[in-house]
Every structure is written in C-alpha cells, then in structure tokens.
Length: 216
Image (cartoon, rainbow, N blue to C red; front, side):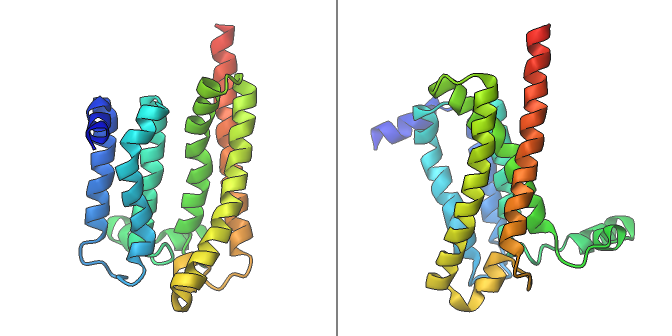
C-alpha cells in the first residue's frame, strides 16, 4: 500500500492534474445519470484505469504530451458513456448555441458521436504507443509509428469482440444501446475502419514532424 501511495506522489504535477480531471469528469457524468442500467459498464473501466495509472506511469513513464492525448480520449469516452454514445445530445447543444443542428448541417442520419470517439482513438493513441515503443523497445521513429498503427487496428478489432461478449453476458437486453449499433449490422466494421483512418492520419503527421526535425 505504501508503494502505491508513493506512486501517486511521484506523478508530475500535470499528470496528477490529468487524473484528477478525469476522476471529476466521471463523477459529473454520473450525476442524474440518464441510463443507470448501462452506466457501470461504461465507467467502471475508467475508474479502474485512474486507480492503476500511478503504478503504470511509474513502471512505464510517458511524456506529458502523451498523457494529455490519453486524457482527451478518456474525457470523450466519459462523455459518451454518460449518454451511451448513441444518445449524446450534440444536436440539441448545437441548436442552443447556433440555431442549427450538426446532423442537419452535415446530413447525418444517425448519431455520429461513437464514430468521433473511434476516430480520436486512432488519432490520440498513436503518440503514446509510439513513444513507449521507442523508449522501451528502442525502435526508430518509423518502426514505432508503424507498430502504433497496427496496435490501433488490433485493439479496435479486439474491443469490438470484447464489447459484444460483455453485453451478451452481462446485459443482453441492452446490447444495442451499449454497443451503439443504431440498427447498423456493419457498425463494428465501420468503427474499426474509422479508428484505422485516425491512426493513419496521426502516424503520417507525426512522421512528417519527425522528418522535419531531423532536417533542421
């Protein structure tokens, strides 16, 4: 137990702030929770991550930029978890702010928040994973980015399988709500493709930045 508390003390100020921000977001997401039956499936993994993060960061340190990328992803997930992804009311928020809806502006026939989070999974996880590969596997920039790209594709596929199994076992009556399929039989494949596109964009951008830095 002492080593666990020491791990918290060893966190940098920014990393500690990131964990506290995420914990606060989880608390807010569960105030007057509109979908209490599904909320534990969405938020318990995030709480476990917060509790484990100090040990993980002590064992495998990451830069503040990498931790910031992960924080942004988990904040987006926490917001989606409050509304089961399929029901995030971004159209209502946009209507209040601008008088127009996002779905109307882009011709969306379904709630697209889950696609956004899958895209950001690809965009935001490439940096921390590639950084870990360079630091702990001594890979070069190109090899680490390629490995991070493959990591996103593999984890996306495994997550879709895990998500399906979890709902079948724990909440079969709410599978469509939890999985966010919205009646689309190809939803899982589209989610994976969206994440892979995000990873390709991130890997390309980070690769160009690394090349530019080497030329200077």
